Amino acid sequence: MNQFQYLFQISRGFWQSSLLHTAVRLNIFTELSAKPLTAIELASRINADKRATELLLNALVGMDLLKKEGNMYFNTSLSKKFLVEDSPLYLGFIIRHIANMYPYWGRLEEAIKNGRPLRSPIRNPEEMENFILGMHNLAQNIAPILIKNINLEGIKNLLDLGGGSGTYSIHFCKSYPNLKVTLCDFPNVLPITERVIKSFGMSDRIRLVARDFHKDALPSPFDVAWLSNILHGSSPGLCESLIKKVYNILNPKGKIIIQDFILDETKTKPPFASLFALNMLIHTSGGRTYSLSEIKNWLIGAGFTHIKRLKIKLPNDASIIMATRV
Image 1 (cartoon, rainbow, N blue to C red):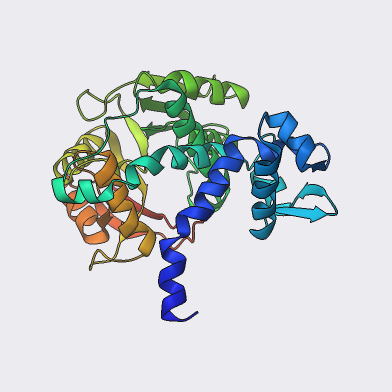
Image 2: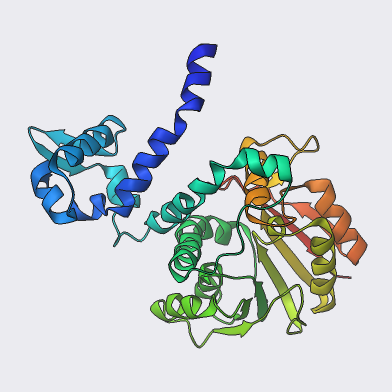
């Protein structure tokens, strides 16, 4: 790819993302899961224009998200695995959540000039559900990898701070039968969490506690605190304070385990982490992604020792940092 092609591809990248967002919102892949359909048949099912539906389907074939034989459209192995609603690895909710971000990314210039977020925290129930179940979609793909690389043998109780859908708690409990989890999150999140946990039969193992973890006291004590994708939503000062709070509710020799998108020391790479910092500019008042040294400094300042970054390759480019309370 030459320089012209590279820049042209970036400039029109939203065409492909908009196509995927629209197809998921219209349930195209789920509609095709039972049997192949023509464009006319599918248009009738989704209450859409026949000509426009055919154009959409042809473009999805061009992106290798569908197959076409004659005038019939089929799911590919990729779309069957990740884009059909009853698949255990379904990503539709996270795709819907990302689609909800699109209008705000279109105003990035405004955020750069003003230095302020473009939206308030999510309050719309549908958007909140897309966000929380989107995190569930991601965690379902990530948790099996983490379980193989994080040893919780002998751990009796774990705090899942800002646990969202509870997916990581569920997988921890499935792998460690004697483990009990307390999951803290905002009151408007927990009804969704409760549904997910109940669907996995884990209601007796995972206790839900409503907290604003920056403002409220945390429950205690715990052997492990799990903080997944929490730090990037907060300012440096709030991150530092939160890590100190976590230190104080851990038992001696207790561990903090952090999952987040970690920047290198130039704060430019990996590319996803530097892009995600802009996503936090758009959506939060002080959040961004952080470098390993920044997080280490907060951990050391709180009193943690034996700080290490685990050598795990995760599909979302996140990293795992672990530290121990004295």
